[in-house]
Length: 73
Image (tube, rainbow, N blue to C red; front, side):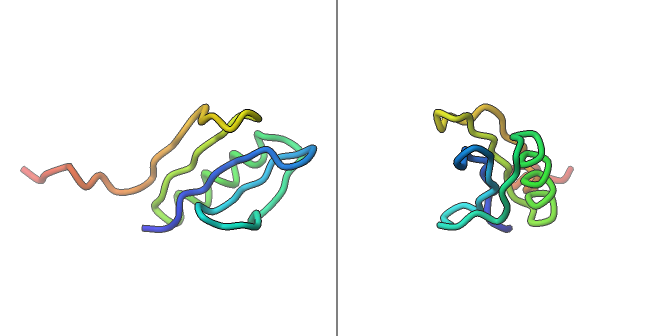
């Protein structure tokens, strides 16, 4: 499982940052563009994408990790 991807406020724009990383992966003008990139990376890495507002609170999250609690019948 890869690192979770966070969309965070970054100056006048929005950045995609891997969890625990100091530098952003990419910076965008709009939150929407950053959110699409974060979801794409999270899908590939089987991780979670978290969309944060300017205040830092998580507004939305999408999980692409396998469900570890699902049992086969």
